[in-house]
Length: 140
Image (tube, rainbow, N blue to C red; front, top):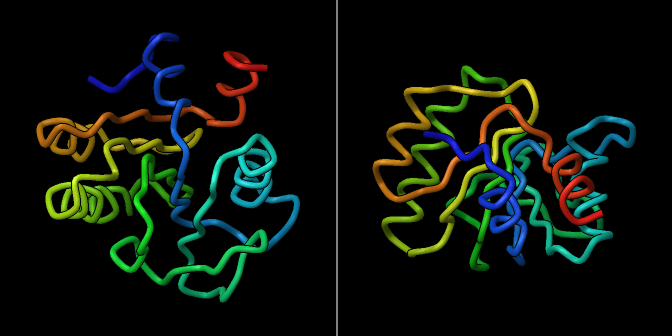
């Protein structure tokens, strides 16, 4: 079951490094403003966007597998129909490297089957919640 209780969400917010799949270069879009907020609150944000060289002053990666640094959370700003492929990449990374132990699907994004498969592989999953909103509510 995806995480929904405050204690579990707050534990995830202990993370240091967040890879943001779908991180946008466009100010005013949630996929830009939420990662910018997280960065301002001390998280290392690693953008994953094959169409950008840099986002928020950080080099952007074409895919999650290319990210060299250890990743605590994979934050997803892509449509729900892309979630199975993204969570497969999270599962592969988690199995190979032991990091990426959580996936956070932003507000309006969910996929129950893909989330269940990720959870079966030991990955915590949050669906249909804004990381900025939850951070502000729990840690504001």
